[in-house]
Image (cartoon, rainbow, N blue to C red):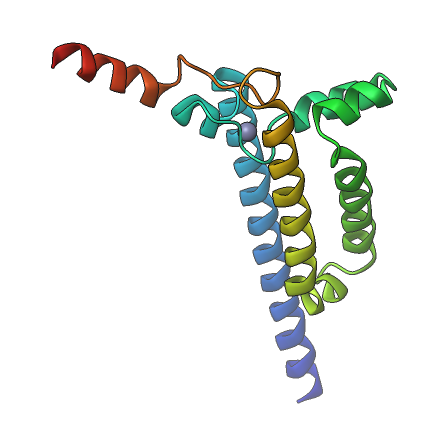
Length: 155
Ligand SMILES: [Zn+2]
């Protein structure tokens, strides 16, 4: 009886590990797809609408931070200084607890905190820099803008 129980639990553990591996593979594939998309078109929201999104400048901020250009990183996206420690904390938490219970427990508060910060900083950056200053510049060659121009020229 106890032998069956052990077999059953090891079977479930193996199944859970497989599910975790599938989740991880999905996340890696998703991240790779996003990276390829970004490499070709840049920000998809700006590519379509011409408007910068709340995350615009984050990649360049990370690159500036990698060069230890702190002022450049802050200019490209001030929240790089929040995002990097948060990502590091998530990785450390994940390494210690694969279920990330502390994050799951506080996911609502963390989501509000993170989204609130991004939206507040987005609003400030839009007021300060839109539509002329990169990375908050307006893209007049965006898909939607070209479509509007195309149809406007036909009327
Ligand atoms: Zn963007």
